[in-house]
Image (cartoon, rainbow, N blue to C red; front, side, top):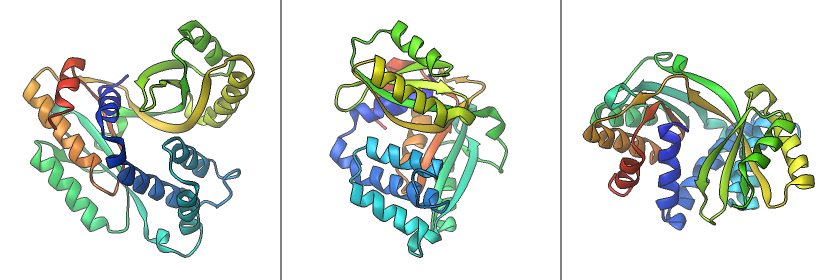
Length: 264
């Protein structure tokens, strides 16, 4: 698991859940709005289905989901949203990609540029770091702790997934496992996993599926002060309302991540 993935998991586990729900729902709503431009039929629009699955996995109310779909597919304010990607380097030469959905590109660009500058990074031109990342499909599942790795690997193989990653515990104490696959076969793998798990593996539930960006190369961050600056930058970006996803290619000692999670 990349350093950014570990960091995100630690922050999620330490977060006060209720305080984060409003911001999380706002991000998920924007994702649904943008996806719904391709059609309001969840069954026919895979991008929308992914967004809705993630929203449901986060406990977003159905009414909120439906309103976001209507905004994106109709003539509401959702038509003002546009997707923009920013690329740059953080402290220690770490590559960072920031995906946003915004109704005011000047505001978003100004905020992102300010954060990079404030925390020792440099916002770059389009294409400066995207070559470092590659797409992969991820099917997220929650499971009981007594399901062993051998069973999970067999399930992955039977469902045409390529590998598994363990991602710690969610807020309810369930173990989270990610099944990794080719981004082009994500929908098929998710369907196979759902059917196989329902028939053969009790205590495992498929929550959502997504296309993620993972780095081809990892930058070790061995200086604690650099690590602290980098994590402050990532936190500032994550707390900006228009930011949807962040991808970065760092690796920081797990003990430092735990320590710094309460101090950034």
